[in-house]
Image (cartoon, rainbow, N blue to C red):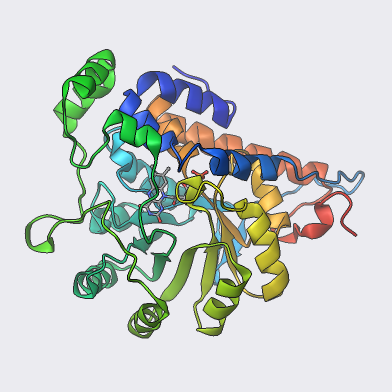
Length: 371
Ligand SMILES: Cc1cc2nc3c(=O)[nH]c(=O)nc-3n(C[C@H](O)[C@H](O)[C@H](O)COP(=O)(O)O)c2cc1C
């Protein structure tokens, strides 16, 4: 029995339960981790303006997302190899999406097939594509995603090369695992995780193998360019989201190409240690693109107040990554439900403090000093 009252609780328990190599894969970041820290600091440093006596008895966290109602103002950011946190993690996240009618990102590098994720999520899933450098195999994946029922494609564009993540390198993290003496000791020291992996199956990249070829997580995608984006836009008839954008100039060009939305993100600080904080980029991009264009946000959200702050900075929807994996590693599906409740309660209480009843009414006016 564990109690998760904050994201830090979940992370602390996850750190004890997971093999060091797995924890460092989930928790790690590019370089010294300064960018990851800065993402969180910049959100923390936003000060909100409380208001009183507004009658905030009846509050709603639901928001409109691509013309549908999302039950919560946050969803699950796409993450590769989630089943490393615990067997069945991808499907736990899919059930969370189903229960709250919010999107779960099904990663190209997922440890459960894209077909199984959307089936379990009952349609509440978005497919995330990493351009593989091979346009034919990317197109084959898109055809599969369409056949499986995906209506929204998330193209991740901030990984021309996979960031150098020293904590992974030190642990010898590779997919598939290479088990040398250091990893053997690591697994032996975490028998609960290791026995589970042994009996329930070692996590693997589930969208590949057999006729679908192999996926190299560390392969270069440096050839991706604006022409590729145009071809993808022409091919994909559904909603198209560009994830991993931090520049105003890029955002303006993306908008002008008829892309449906931008997910402002620094990949949780996993790509460029010296990048500006994603929340600052969100503020800049919102100012440049005007109020109507849908902007999503991820990178550094660790509480319900953080979610409210992201909406205040211009987000129309927020995605969360690591905290969900910490919660699953800490206490499985029950931990995930607890973490979701924590975020929901924190966001709802923050709304009450701000004198608001509706997540959709949050805007930059709730930021202290903003006139
Ligand atoms: C373990 C892990 C795996 C990830 N895998 C992917 C991926 O396959 N595709 C992708 O677009 N982003 C991936 N991301 C980035 C997340 O989608 C998201 O941008 C980031 O985690 C958000 O920051 P947060 O963890 O601070 O919430 C991954 C992040 C983590 C922690």
